Structure formats: C-alpha cells, structure tokens
Image 1 (tube, rainbow, N blue to C red):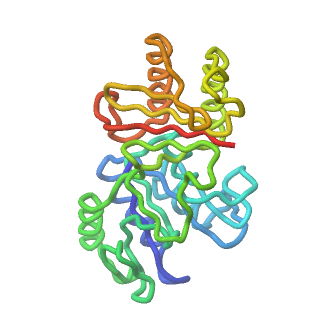
Image 2 (image 1 turned 30 degrees about the vertical axis):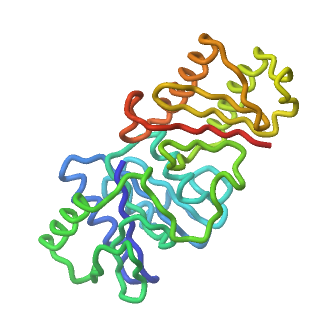
Length: 266
C-alpha cells in the first residue's frame, strides 16, 4: 500500500489535485483509497463535500479525520491509525492523503509556503493540464513509499514509551489498533498461564517481551528470562508470526526478517 500526501494552505486546490491524481491512478488500474484531514466535523455523505469528491473520483474507501469524527467513529484518529484501518479493510494499491503535513510521507504541495523535506514538487492545481497530471502520477509511482517506512515529522514519543502493546519488525514500529492489541494481550497471557513463570521471579506481568530471530524465540517477563521447552517455543513463535500475517504487512515474509519484538506492558 503506497502513500502520497497532498499538502498546502486553504483554498489552494488540494482537493482538486487529489481528485485528479485519484482519477489518473484509477485509469492505470490501481485501487485507490483516500484520507482527508479536516479541522471541523465531517459529513461524508453530502454532495459536493471534499470527501464526496474523493469517492466520485474513484476511491474505493474514503476516510476523513476531523476534530471528533471519522466515518462512524466519534473521535479524532491519528494518521497511522487510519492507515492501519485502511490497510485492514481494503489494502488498496495507493492511498492519497489530503493534509497531514506533519508526516514525512512523500508529498505534493499546492503552495510554496507549505513545503518540507518530503515535498516532491510544488504545483498550482488550477493551471495543470492532463499531461501535467500524467507526469505527476509518474512521479508518484516512482517516489511514493509504503506505510511501514513512514517517519514522522511531528514531535512524538517513541511508541514503546506510551503504548501498552508494541510490535517492532526489524526495529520498525508497526501500527496496531485496539482490537488487535486485545487479541495479542489475551493470546500471550493465555500462553503464560500455562507456564510456571513465578518460579523464575516473574509475578506481576508488568512487562512481557517476546523476541524472535530466525533461530531463536525468547520470552522475558518482568525482565526475567523464562526458559521454554521446544513445544512452547514453537507455539509462541508460530502464534506471533500468525498475528503478524493477519495484519497484512507489506513485504513481510515468514523467512525474511531479522528480528521481531512484541512488547506488552501495563
């Protein structure tokens, strides 16, 4: 799932540019999703709204983030959460993001005063012809990146500082929604219930770490290394790999990773 963002100030043609890019991607037989950022409540069903235009342009899924709504979720979700939902629901070939300039996804700006190190080019959407759009989408095909290689521009903490469940694959943080976090928590604690971890000094389960590499699976509970027999080690590894496969992560293959870290903490 490749991502490109359209950024710029108000009334500079961001939605016009987004819809033209979506239309061109659809013409090239790509499936497309879109995410629209707004500073007010969103009405996704009304004719002529920005998100309605995204849908009319050919996007199979349209999500919108406002101060307190995204489709039917009455809260503001961050971009990573919405991208995860987009990927889980449809996993389109491309996602066109309108807004969210605080992220380091490759972007096209509609104004010179809103640019960053990830800006591919700056254009005036009102002056673009069909050939210009073709060239822009050629650039998007070449320069867009997948969601798993995102680096934020915004000032955020390390995921392990504040998340109760953290998944790292080759030291890269993977977004996990609440539903999947609950499944991981229940599954891992269910496995621990079958192991006499208190004999090794682990009593509170304040911090649980599962560490995988190609040859070894390691379990630490409250910083105590828990010995695993062959059966439990294989079961823990297969369960962790199974959870990751269900997330439909781009380019993840069971035999093509260096290390996996799954962290659960209270």
